[in-house]
Length: 489
Image (cartoon, rainbow, N blue to C red; front, top):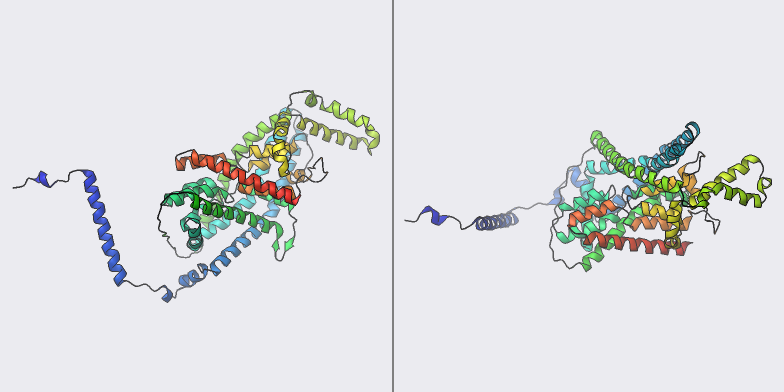
């Protein structure tokens, strides 16, 4: 008679292997039975959902409708947000002037007016447009349409080594690349997941939006083309360029990466429903709040550092700026060359501020990197903004707002300060069409976010891929910006 012990499995691992084999055989049998007996004729579905799906996931009309929805969103973003943006810009300019006028003179007042208020104003101004962007994305998700987009785009993604599931991170990237990279965890295939992680930062995130908006407003005329605003069309084009760069890079990586893989695409198609205003409102509030709070911390810290670097200098050219400027003006005829004493004093104040900024610590830092960025159409001020924006892309606008406001007590908006910048060699506006397009392309392709690099390292468990990502994206950005400026100038 056999004992009970003789029937025991040799080990736990053997038991698990047997269970796996049994499960595979069972489901294989079920699939064969279903294949022989079950028939589903999708064409016979006559309800409203089926009719909408046939249109929204159509191989032609589906893409046309999706493109039209995107175009409408960007047009509305520009039209609806213009008035609140102007009000916020004017309010921060007035606040800065009030602080300069009513608080005691001194470095603390200057820091508050020229550093903190100017820096924060450079990000708060974009809250309306960012909120509207999140509003429309939330409505599309709540209504069930976004799942149709995922299904629709799977046809395209397969040709580039991705799947429809890659659309979720790519679309999530319009808010922030960090959660978008984390969203790739639902992609089972490692090769598809790795490619999606590497290309997701190309999609235009909300941090790029402030840069795009301020540059577009400076170099693209506020005019209509057919029924659409040229600035809105340009903004949509930037989103398409980012998405196109992601897809193109994915195709190249799919050819280069020698990783054997096989994947299946399954997506749930939820019922269509009216978006709940409560859910949409909470989503918009939370994401906008997160953007402002996270960006605000970085901008506040960088604005203070920038103000200190711009308000102090290492030599007499900074400390004796007023004497140097006055001597130069006197040699050129002094007050006699101006309509009145007030105009003469205003010119002195302007030249003193410029002299101090150029010979401050930040001025010398900018001059050191100017040879690198000058072929792109940038000066040392923009070069400083490029460096600081590596902490976060949106810091670019706050940096320029801080630099341009140092020593300037006039009530002037950030946009007007940037529009008033002049190329000292050519005598033309610093932000012209050529340099503006160059900047837009640089930020479309550059990896200007150290937080994203950190999350890529965590998701891939190595510094190899984020290092490759940083070098490749920076090189692409530099070459694209260089080509654009040299062709357009």
